[in-house]
Image (cartoon, rainbow, N blue to C red; front, side):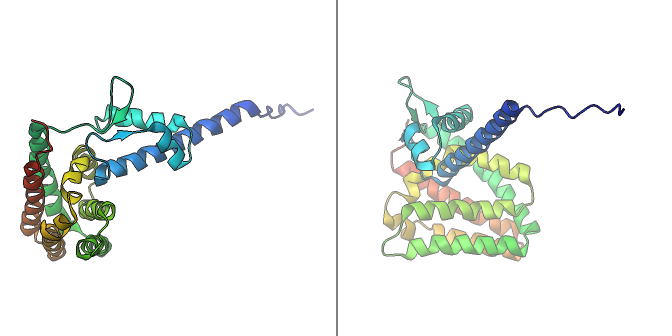
Length: 241
C-alpha cells in the first residue's frame, strides 16, 4: 500500500477569494494610473472637484478601487479631501509654486543633460512623435487643449525616460503630480497661448539638443520652457498669495 497521501482537496472558496483580491489590486492600480495621468498632464485644474461615482462609472469599475486610488493620491498630497468629504485637486499658492519650479529646474535640468548623453534612437523617435503632436495642436485653427497638455507631458517624459534612470523619472513624476494641474493655467488659458507662448520653439530646441548630445543646450531649452510657463502662470493671478 502506498505511503503517499492523497492530494489535499482544493479549497475553492479561498481560491476564489484570492482571485478577487488580485482583481481589486489590478483595478485599483488602473484607476490610480488613470488619475495620475490626468493630474500630471494638467487635464485637471487646481480646485477642481471630483465625483468618485463619476470616475467609477467612466472607468467601468466599482467604488472600491476608486476609493483605494484616491486614498493613495491623497497620501501623495496630489488630491485632498474637504470637510464635506468631497475630493478635489489642491489649490496652489505662489510660494509653493515657486518652490516646485525651483526644484524642477534643478532636477529636470539634470535629467535632460543625462538624456543628451544616453538617448537611443527609439527615444528620439518618441520625442519627435510627441513634439509633432504638440505642434499640430499649436498650428491648428481649432486646437484641443486636452491633447496639447497631454502631448506636452508625454514629450517631456520621453526625454526623461531617455536617461535610463527609473529612480530619477520617479522623482520627476512626483513633482509633476503636484505641478501638473497648474499647467492648466498656461496651456489651457487660451488657444493663443499654444501659438504665442513659445513652447513649440523650446520643444524644438530641446529635442534637437538631445539628438546632438548637447547637454548644456538641452538644459537651456528646458529652463526657457519652464521659466516661460512659470512667468505666464504667475501673471494670471490665479495662484493663492
